[in-house]
Image (tube, rainbow, N blue to C red):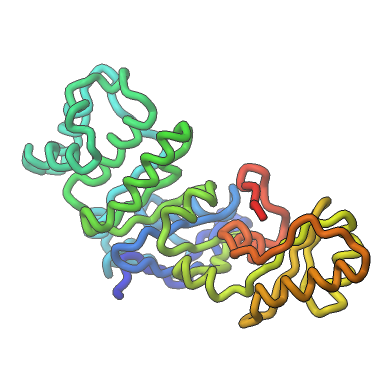
Length: 315
């Protein structure tokens, strides 16, 4: 599969601060690529370099094979973007707002109809944008980004501010987008749960460096499984599990024991349960736990996960 977006040693320095440090990322065609990182990790700066809004201090960025720095106009034709600021005229209808952009880039009238159909907004096209919900404005922003059918879409926090129904609706729409339009989606978000349910591939940036990248299903499968144990004495349970060769993480009411790659999680759970009971440690629950995107994120981002990114994991 060829790359829709490819960067090589992409860097950006602001005076003494190295915001993006030699990022080499590959976004396959027709992927939904989740781009993750803390605030200040370098996500937005990377997106701006991909869009040609700022120049890199070093390295290259290519959109569908076009070097963004060498030919910004040709690269811009191949990418549509939805950033946080919508910039719509509230007194105009959704269709009128789209028509303004359509005329500026010299597209036929039928293009407005096409993108309204794609984002499922045709029945609301004649309403004033000031009467739109936030979710409808997000869809209108997507429609504007899709004018001219660019093969790449760059979306920055498209679910930001949406209610749960709006988030679920946007998740469904983005997941279906590559199959419906053939587009590749680069999705920057801080909602790990939404990325996990939407993305086919992920890239994690930490302190300006890309620390992990790949197909999400393969990344999760390649990691060793874990056993979660809820017990009355996590401290003693952790010591016992460590003595049996497990890598152990502790929480106030439980431990998480990481298995070695290829180890049978069910058999290991049974053996650990037996050992805990023999040591007179009460076990309230025990069992294998599939690795999550949050777990992967924690593994590659050493400091504690910010509260905004934390989501409870059920045993």
